[in-house]
Length: 377
Image (cartoon, rainbow, N blue to C red; front, top):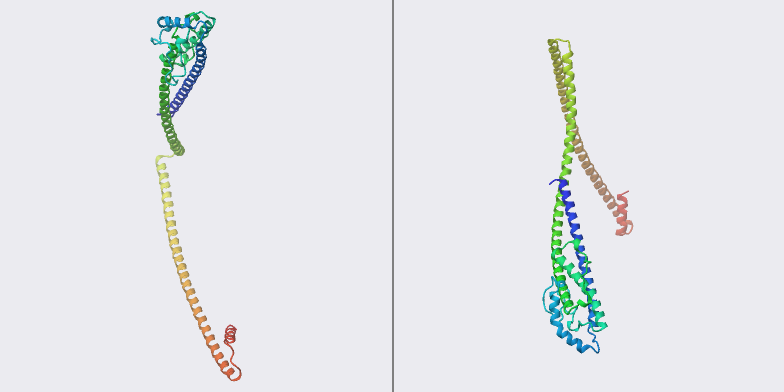
């Protein structure tokens, strides 16, 4: 693998790494947006369900009876309607509560179908239907977008569709909110699972790309070191080649000069041979003279070596004589000191014998002081 291929491969891996990281960030952002939108819809649904749970005075018995009578037929009509294509076909029992799976607890969203009045007898019921229509449309848009993500996930289709389903307040039926919320929960769970798998695969791919990148970088470092070594070798070879070219140029010039001399010379061949013999004789004479001079130089060197050896021998002898002289001087000094000590002792004995008759004997300390003084005097 050449250096350029390694560099291109490193750039390609870095670009793929950046693209995968950008795709992961986009997926995470889409997940956050979906969670935020879902939380907003949950809040709206809770508000609407609290309002739905408030009884309508005066008309409660008749409305409740009407709900019970039309619940089964309304659910079947709603499941057969074209607007519900792609949703799971199931029957919602009045009063059932269906929550999200995965990241959504079961008690976050509750739809009490028994509390949704389907008759248009009161103004409050009609207003409730009108408020439920945009919620239902938004839930449908979320379901379509999640289904599109599940079937064919791509960054170009990550936005929410802006073609809401045409639904009127009079078309609101029992079980529609329950079905759409359950479908939304299932789709969100599927999308999250698929995105988790995609993120895991992307992380694994990024790790592999990083390992490959490290290997390529190591190879690149080795290639650079090898290139440095080759460059040094090339520099050395270039210097040698330059020197050889210079020598070759000089030899060519000498050859050309000799060729010109041979071609342009008017001398005969015997004269050329005679001249060559003369040149040879001169070279032999110079050689003999140099050999004689070399022999003389060798003789001088041998003579100088012998003189040097004699000087070294004389130095050794002088050193030995100096050592012997030192020993003799030490012996002589010792003898003189001993002689002086004996003489001093004799004088001390004489003085002592004389002083014993005339004076009292001195103390030991005075005697030792006088002895030392006379010794060094």
